[in-house]
Structures are given as C-alpha cells and as structure tokens.
Image 1 (spheres, rainbow over the protein chains, first blue to last red):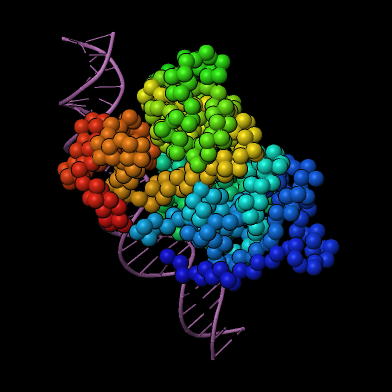
Image 2 (image 1 turned 90 degrees about the vertical axis):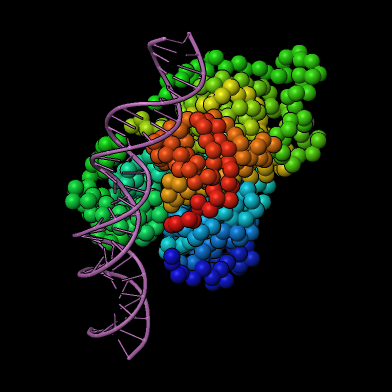
Length: 258
Length: 258
DNA sequence: CGTTGCGTTGAATAAGGTCAAATAGAGTGG
DNA sequence: CCACTCTATTTGACCTTATTCAACGCAACG
C-alpha cells in the first residue's frame, strides 16, 4: 500500500490552442514534429491528416511523480498519449488487493479501458514526472470517421492492447518465476531500444513490489531473482539500475525447463 | 496437448445473400430477430441501422466440435459473433506451452486480436458444435464511419475486452487457487444467467485441463478444488455437470484469507 | 467388452510465500 | 554538511501451497 498523494488539482492542464505561444513552443508540441509520432496514435498519417489530428490534441497535462493521471471510476472523456515519463496502471479489487496491469512509456496510449463503461476501470499513476497529450475521445472518434487511416490505426492500437494482455496472461498462467522476470526485462529492453535508449542499460522506475505485482510474484522473490540473474552473469543490478550483460542467456531462461 | 482435428475446409461457409432461402430461414438469420442482439455488436441500434448492419453479416459458418474457427497466423479478415455453441481461445508460445485466454459463449465476439497485426494472434477452437456470424472487418469499419452508434459500440466492445483481460490478470496475479476457481464459476454463472440459462446448474464444455490452463493451475489442482467445494457444500459436481448450491458461500471464498 | 480419454485421489516434492532482521539509499531538517 | 528518518531492498530460515508423479475409477464408444 503506497501513501502517495493523488491530487488531481495539482496537475497543470495547459490548453494549447488558447495560449499565445511563440513559434518555438508551438513547434514543440505538434504531432508533426514529435519524435514519437510513429509509435503513437497518428502513425502512418500523411502531412495533411496529421495537421487535422493535431487539432484534437487540445492540451498537454503534466503529472508529477506519484500523482494519478486518472483513477478508477473517474468519468471517461479522453485517452492519453505519454509524451515523457513513465506510468504504471493498476486495478484494485473489492478486498483491497492491487494488481499492476502494465507500465507505460513515451508513445504509448493510456485510458482505453474507460471507453466501454464511460469511466476508467483502472488507475494510471506517474512513476516519475510525466507529460501527456490529452486526446478527447469523442474527437478521436469524429476524426476517425473522416480519416479511415486514423480509424484503422485506433483499432490497431486497441487490438494490440488485447494482444499485449494475452501475453501477460501467458506469462502469469504458464511461466515460472524466473521466466517471468526474464520476459519482463527483455520486454523493457526492446521498448527502450525502440525509443532510442540503451537496450542493455536502464533505470527501473518501479519498485520491486510493483514488478512483483505485475509478474504475480512477491517482492522478495523478485529481489532474489535479480540476485540470481546477477550470480548467473546475465545482468548487473544495483538497486534500480540494471545492465543486461548476457541477453542470449536471458533469452535462454525461457523454456530452460518447463 | 490435444489431438483434435483443426481442418478448416471441413467448416461449411454459407453465404446468406447468395442463397435463395425461404422467409423462415431468412428471418432466422437477421440481427433484428436475433435474441442475442443486445449482447452482440449491433447493440443499441435502431431498426434502420440494424438493417444496414445485417448487410455486413454476409455469412454464417458452422464449426464442429474440436475444429478451429481460426488459428494463430491465419490472415485476418473478419471478426466473428458466436451465434450458438462454446469456444475456447488459446495462444501457444515458442516452446509449445498452451495458454487458454478465454471461453466464449453466444453473443460474444471473437477474433479482435487479429486487427492489429493483420493476422490472428491466437486460436479459437469450438468446444461443441458451433455457429458464428462472419463480420468482415473492413465492412464493419466502413459502416462504423456512417453509423456513429455502431462505431462507438465497436470501441466499447474492444475496450471491454481489455477490461476483461485485466480481470484475468488480477485473477492470475493475485488470487489463490480457491479464489480463482470461485471467480471462474461465478463468472460463468452470471454469463449463463444473462443468456436465459440457469445460473446455478450448468454443463462445463471444457476439460479440467482447459480450466486449469485458463486459471494458471494444473488439472489435478482444479479437480481437487471441485471436490473441496463439494465437501464444503458450495457446489455439487459430477464430471462436467455443476450445480451451485451456495452462491453466497462461493462469493465468500474471495477474500476469505489474503 | 476392451480401449481410450478424462477425472479423481494420495504421497512426496519443489517453488514460491511468509516472517524477520539487516542494510542501503534518498530525502529532510537542523 | 551531517544526523536522522523513512522507505526500498536484500538475505536467511522456515512454511504453505500448489505441482509432480503415480495409481485408479469412470464413462463413452467402437
């Protein structure tokens, strides 16, 4: 149980279109100039359509470390694109147990669990100071009707979220603890690489407990496994800093023994 | 490992519009007259829009017990609405382990995992003789652009699939074996009730091994738990037939002890 | 009426959880 | 800058839960 504040009012909402911002600032926030474009919602759009999509990104929002971008039950209006920083998404069941359902990095979308019920199903909490693009979902749908490429890509994003979740089910349902952590590290590595960061040397933004929750393990088990991987020469780990020294070895942890 | 045949060619595809079918038969297959309408894709549409949606349900397909509706890697064209029968969806990882990701009953949609990659990510196998409505996805998207209610409902369905998957993550990640089986039985019960079947007396279409895979347990554990629930007076079970005799008790299994 | 697949049950075992104590960092206020 | 506090992490010892291995029973089916 964390005791972080989740004060919504503390997050600054900056409506871009209403601010008299200079060219530099304006340039900074368009999808066209965003280096995450090809990972994000507007993927594959031509310049003209891109300009139209930019119109629906009506605001940016800062979320400070420990704060919630949204909480379960909040009314659903928007999905969010992570612009910078790192989030975790969680759900809480009736008897108070928390389950981490994912970790989100720049270019990834958040809040799609809210479409179906009209309110968010889970929580999204910043693991470090973050910035997100706010995409009012009714505008996304509206524009989707006009730009089939955008509509299609939205469906792809939703579908891939389902596929990702199935991967987690495989992980939780049929892998041993070692395999789970290996998959987790390899997945992080791949996503960091995709974003131009080192795939072998990174800083974990989440605690052992959060990793454990995500992987269906206790924090002590996660800690022990980190130590074991280090002894086996697969990684070097010091607190939240991880360096993968033997990626093949890490891959061989999978299926090493059913 | 099952040895069921998954011969695609064996499934009969019946293109409705090209058959000279009598009024009775025609009546039988329209969405307007389908008793699953309000559970299915056309939920909430008025009569006029419903007629338009019927046009995209261009075929029915029969899938016999043990056959696959689609397999991982098959090219994605359509999503499917279960009209009758019972499916399981599974994924297979590199080293041959199978994970059951869900069980699908009438009114539920299948194949949404294929949108993102252009090919299905998992397999859908009939657990008894089934019939599905074939919904070519490009037509669904096209019509979605014209009927906002349909577009919105498609998004809801996709989002709810994500929410469902998060529920399974919670189950696999933070519940004990007993709780998992209780959740499973209660969920089945609710879904049967919703469809007008007895919520307390039903026939399991899946084996203990399939239940185990879905719940992240071994088949022996599932069997033992069924016996234990019976000893505790919560259910009566005989092979695949289950009767819930104490639904409150079953609910109290949850959170009975973290 | 034997075969076959599915389900049940028991005994032994292993994997991961629990509890507890020690340590390491990060942040805070003097 | 240092002492203090708080939280996160590591590690050990022990315990519980679910798995593994094995035997047997049951029901369906040719």
